[in-house]
Image (cartoon, rainbow, N blue to C red):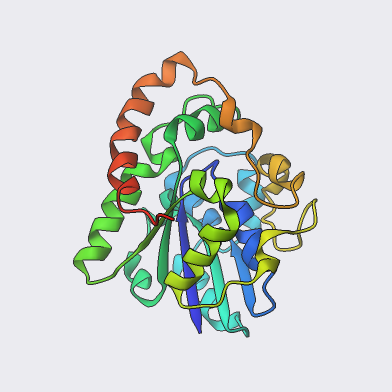
Length: 237
């Protein structure tokens, strides 16, 4: 079995990538299974917080058991946010193929601020992505890094390269899906997924052109430092 663990920052194309893998007949996808755990342990306030914690286990051991005991297909694709994993025992990352999905932080922050007015570095995820990437390399892994901007420019070519790096066959089914909510969406989709629900494939979102709020310029500057360090390690066409 191929166990793929996507480690993404927020307001990226992580949901679109999940939809892409869900089109494969050999794949099961999971949408942010540690979100409830993260909300409980961090104490942060997110839309639908109580509903999410009631819907998902808040014990990471229970989540891990359910993840690896329920998949009956050849490929398991787990969509995770970097800041969720930050609060966990990350030893489970030794047993999966880890993919870091990165995006220009200016675009992430401008988009995120539409829902959470004053995000901090942990919310953006890029600093932790960089730290975790280095830890996995030290453990002897070769994590895959992909930049969402390149996927949006040439989705077919980039997804083929991603699949090759994972060790699975690329299929053109991965390029398109039906618009609208999906049965495998997390219950938080109504707060976060409006843009991707309007799509039928990989395409730039309105969030790509939003103006960065002035009070978040310093956060953006710090985030770009880590983004550039991961960008040079990303897959290229």
